[in-house]
Image (tube, rainbow, N blue to C red; front, side, top):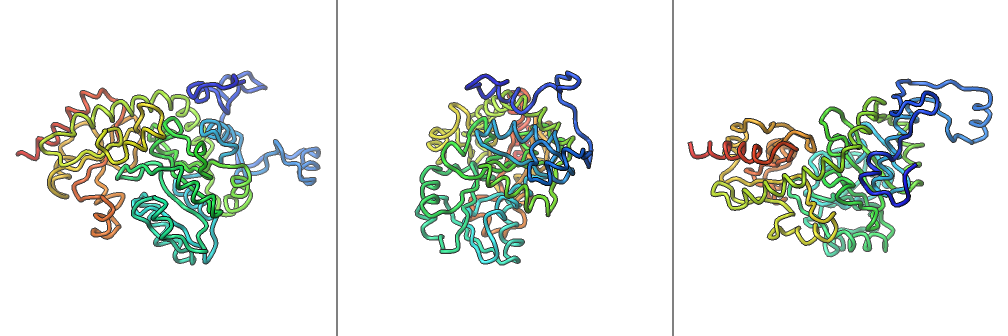
Length: 398
């Protein structure tokens, strides 16, 4: 049993899991099954509405999934959590639990490209309207709100501009109007920031990223109050079926045991990386909330774990698409691919990848120049990471 007021590190290791009571196995087994045996006693309870501890079918719940949900809920300081098959499944289900045909959503226009496409291309076909604001501020929300607004969707750290909003005024504004706040906490993880602590209603994660941290699965999490999560679980989750595989839940549980260790290293490497390249002659700008001159530095200091500013840095090299690609193509260690939050350092070019489907003029107005390189700092030795990017930048001189 967890000690009262256990630290985050202790929660990461122990929460949600216990030795198997039948065998004594320290690590609980993975329940690789689609269906479960009923006994007369269980069926009687089930028909009477007492479903506690009764498993029926894998699309409803699984013991390994339950363990993962308990651990994530504990780490986020939340009453309940639901594990789903992907980050976009988490985004979709969380929003669909709030809105119907004719309703309206407010979001920031620098939102993740997949979420941007969901709002602009999918939900609009179902009559769910949206308004993008340039900055997630009360003034912008006042201009965007309508009588049909049911949700405000935003990100702890915007992808890839790394802007951090002032959360408390946004939450206060939304609660005064009965509007649900949904936040994507993927970039920060609960180690750096717990959104429910400032009153946010719903937290989602792409657990593919820092939550799992090893780049070997796809997954998502929805975290919030029990009534909100249970409504999803008993409704659209079962009917749409974005169910996580038990083995993916197991790997995510294992990854979470080292979340605090990994995040410390990611954050330390990102800070050192940003400081090294902030005045580089071939770099136009370094975007990182840990730098004192960064526009989001004050909000990062206000809300984030002291000294932890995340593991993401965006480099804007001098030039355009070609120059950014030249740097990337001349990296020898960092991997050129989508995703983030792995042990390996990963790079991608938002203008041609995550935000490549967005109109170029709109993309630039979002603060995403063609020469931006998004860097997910891994846990390699920082001197090796810096040397790799120095080599990539040197190719611009050739």
